[in-house]
Image (cartoon, rainbow, N blue to C red; front, side):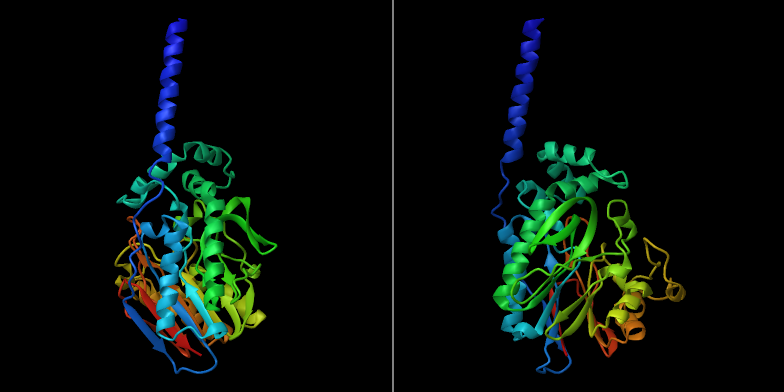
Length: 378
């Protein structure tokens, strides 16, 4: 009996050793980001008042393989903007899309993760190679979380994600002397303490952040109030009354994360706090939906004044008429703003949309599904 027990124990030890070797090898990659810009366009006339620059970034899993890859990709867009004379030092606000930091969940994983064809395949690889951390995070997930698998995947990588996100955007904001609205990132109840982004555990929030022209992270975080149906199973909604406003060198700025731009509650706060312009980082998953008939908002009841457009307007048309561009003007008296969407081949998730400009009137740029810099002179 002892001999059988020893044999089983030895087998388990060997199995564990093989797993440890497998889980730790090929966690760096020689794969490099694709650096390309397809469209650069400006609206309005160049003035000394400054500008808002929307970065319609095109991202792939390889861009998130390491801090170096992520920084290289983000900085590429700033370099292209600089070449096109669109960075006017402190008088420029640069806006990146929603979720641009979220996929840092894939940082420093096995190379096969970045070559996976589907998100499910990539997630399986990540979970298996971090089985201990994943299990611990899964078991300790808050009771309110319905999808504990997705929650655990993000929560176990949160500290690493936050560190890369802050370091990259802080360094680049300081280097190019511009204010950056750094899209958004999923983190467990984040806060800023002594200028450092902290993870406090608990529920995940879809959070946008602002870095000033000296690279300092503003302590006021923008947490999404109206998560979509896809998010609600593992993302916690914040409260509209907590939407902050930011003083910049070009005026008071309001930031609405994606779907928050659809709801009047957001503009009541912005109007009360007095904003000069509004920016909206967005992400619309899937391919080809932008030009299809809109089926209504998912995650909350479609606003009453938008219900008549269901099945009549395209998704893109609904974004123009019922989100930031028209609502900011009609409900908060704001006449300048940008709504920028993430593009890319991020496993099989898809990414759709085109940048929307509020320049006294609302306009959607051409739908290209590629990287673009869209500039609005003030």
